Image 1 (cartoon, one colour):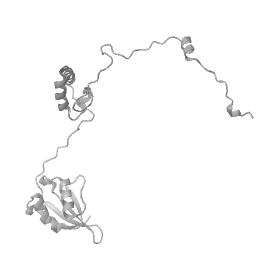
Image 2 (spheres, helix red, strand yellow):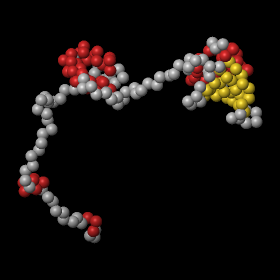
Image 3 (tube, helix red, strand yellow):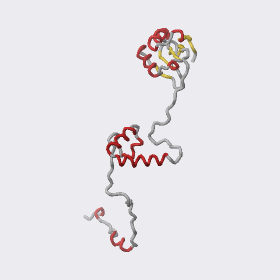
Image 4 (cartoon, one colour):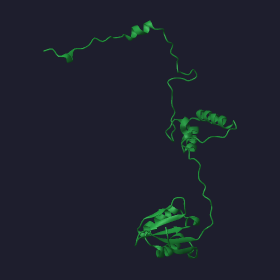
Length: 197
């Protein structure tokens, strides 16, 4: 029995050597640089383990400079000269990728009165809102964690505001806890009472 599956069509085979001989010879351009010796030797930093040319993008750049000056002083001088040339042209330096970015400076505020208010969520469910505690140089996240652990409930920091929302009605306990924990004078704590959303 003769199967059609096993029949193969004759394919035209092109010999690449013959093809090249017929076309014009093409000159290949060398990518090698004349002033560089091959094979390339890459020096890795002992601090950040990156090639020394990339140490400047590392947060521990000062430590990398010290290591490089101790182990490869000639290379250190060459890299420092390149840095000085870049900085001496009078242009403003741009931030390098992976840097820390612009650090936000917190504005100093005078201590305000800490206000405690209760807001009704459902029929018998309340949340307690504490405002103004950040003006006393207290980190809001630390304060919310302290409230959550003290009252065994959820506490969160409202974004962009000096406000902490605590689940449950804990206004009476807060009047005792805030002066004890954060050393805020009792006269600067005010209970507003019930508030609407």
